[in-house]
Length: 430
Ligand SMILES: [Zn+2]
Image (cartoon, rainbow, N blue to C red; front, side, top):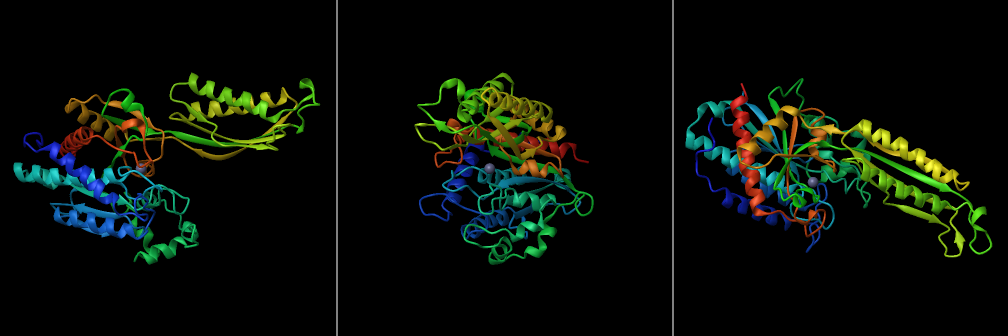
């Protein structure tokens, strides 16, 4: 199958993708701001808009019971192996116009490219080989119910039904929200794709997403192939010393909890700078009694530490716990700690990832490999299916903010790479 010959106007396609993202950004809970939480009214508008496009592309459209909009392009019937492509359509409050949505709109543009290619080449064989299912995941950000990845968990068969009893800020239970949207929460199990039972034909999942960080821009690169999603540890520490008078307590008789914590925070930064790929953050700090003339008696703080290697992450977590104890004991203070999160790293599928990297090479684009520091639907899907992920440069490294953007030429590059990737995949599917 040769998909490189037709002179499709990729620049015009990129402009259409950007216009579609901006149109979808108008569908929001808050006028003047982009806020679209799980199954809120504007999601109906997004579904209507995307469904119309899917139908125009000849796709079979359905909404599963967790609210994922799914369009199946299967020109030759159910015997064709299918690739899932998509991302999420929910947003954080006061969001940008591209996080998630871009991946869905790009996927639909790829279906359009595939249609044109097949029509131009009259390639019956290619039609028999490959089907595409575009998925607009209903929930990824975890905003409404404080639990992320609801959409992809349902597809991957890892949705926990206990979540249905969770309540949002207005006291609306998740199962009630699902019913109010016109769906049946009892049927969430049917949303699952199970390679063992019902879906032997799933080749894998591809997600295209903005980087949401500054690395590609700093290196003047357009795209990156994601190796995996970093593992993450979250710990809470409490340093306890002795609050006392700031004027009458000599330095050598103090038990200053903040001084101990401060020494340790600097150690966290210096360790993270010394290990490639390690990021560590103390982002939250609570100080008692927090008065100018009192020696701090107690400090509570958080540690967020991430790395692609679980071994490396575990090593530095143990090291930093030891460093906290040593900083405390030096001052006659104590430290306690509690683990809040221990999430292993998730590798993308080596085979699909290699095909994606080859597609970049074939387009003359350097195939920068990088881990993702943030979680994505691809991380959840990777537990059940081969998954691959493509990052597009984030101008200014800005995301989860109304200034979030993406460059037209990077969208064009992603479309070229996506088309090449599909062509290579179709060629290797038997
Ligand atoms: Zn996202």
